[in-house]
Image (cartoon, rainbow, N blue to C red; front, side, top):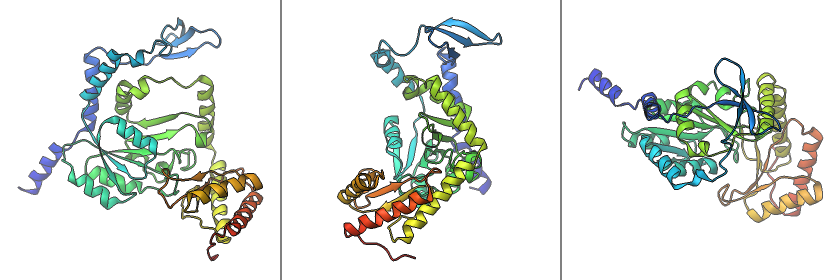
Length: 366
């Protein structure tokens, strides 16, 4: 077979994800069950009265008769049966998951019912081996994080995207520990590394850097449309309250235009790492704002945490199995803009005293 004919056949066999999503949405339209999301604004203290922004005539007074799932219809057998039938109509997918993905991602992958392949952490060769072993015409999705919160390391985003393009796979990145804190406008590591346009689905949180609660994904309109129309986790949930949304919008807008907080956080993280290393404490290598301090024993990690709180007024949680592998138990510090240099030196002194008291080994200062 000539190279030209081979290239033509490969082009034919490549999964057309846009076509798959279009078909899924078209199917809903043809069945008359496409979900239309009405823009409704509540009237404070006047439930069930509200205002509806529909059409071009401005807000219209309405009466809400469908708020929340008060009769437990979300668990009705007929509703569940219809949802399961809809899910089976969506083409199957093989998910390739980094072994250090967060438990919430693992739970989501398990709940999807899709086949999964786990690749060694940030191991591009292993990921490619798994991708190459799958049939070319099987839909694929690579799920990984930008910042891994326990080690503080970062995924090779561009290299993973290269493999996704080579093997015609979708990409899903968890930016929960990066949004708001990296990138010129707080878009995360993918923005900082100018890779956001290569990612198919970006997950973020409205907690952590944004200081409120909730979460989101960002993706192509067709992907979002399918998720809103098919995902039980979205359909049978309650929307954020107006006060939370107002707070989130204020935080996002501020951090899109201000780098002051990001710069201070990065400077303090670097300073704390230096201060702890100077004292010979076993700081794990990290290129992010996360400062993990290796202990290697769950009992000692808990005892150090207890002493810090009881005697020094320092609160830090011990991180034990199953969050991290056995034998890698640690303390995990997350310095922010409000931590002072004095606080950091006091923390370093306290840790050295506790290390000495517990006869733990200090490293030779560099």
